[in-house]
Figure 1 (cartoon, one colour):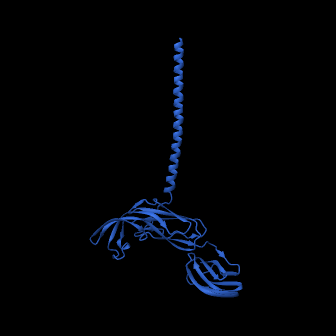
Figure 2: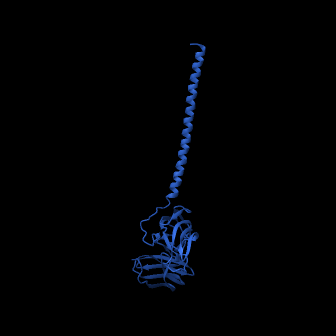
Figure 3: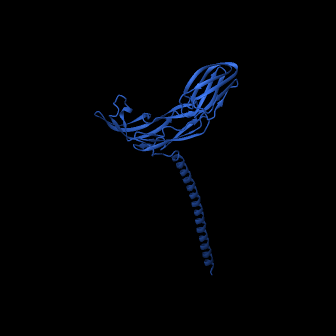
Length: 290
């Protein structure tokens, strides 16, 4: 083999090695690119899944004229984590009387093209809301959506009206006027809801200078309250439900020990609160009606 052939052979081998290294580097680069692409895709999937899985829409329990389900969620107990889903239906048409009270009811109807929900306010402190479809997305007439309420609150027991704001587009005829427009504002005309905050189950908070006893407990709305105090106390004694609605209230004046008979009449079974408020503080005790 001549000198030129040897150098030609080496050049060929070097060329092959160069091609192999180039392809190896290209494969590694593609692998890195693919890994990055897979990572980005995974992040996108996780984000989409997280935003679309906020709540599951239930469209099976809507009777005629019903736009919100369920009618009410369970109580949000103070200091306890809560999660509850409300499904909504966007009607195909609505009575124009809902928007203009001067119009006669059940006479003029507006066709609802689409609705979007922009915000939900009025929830108890610590309770947040998320919706599906997302805030700002349009839902066509006859379509469905849902809202997930979750979190923990320490707000006062009671009923909290939720305000739903957004934009709706309608068309129709009232008298001889053709209407085809979109309006922003409170959607409470047909989407209205209350969230209920309740005292925690088993609450028993008695101030140091008062001894409080309920007998029997449970009962059927008839029981005796025994109040004892080393000091003379004057104040009010009231009975309320878990939403804080007062059922009965009376003035008390106790020195030493006093028994107070209570008859509440027909009450729905459940938990109720007996509360004594005096200048020295507040005493609360729960009892059960069966």
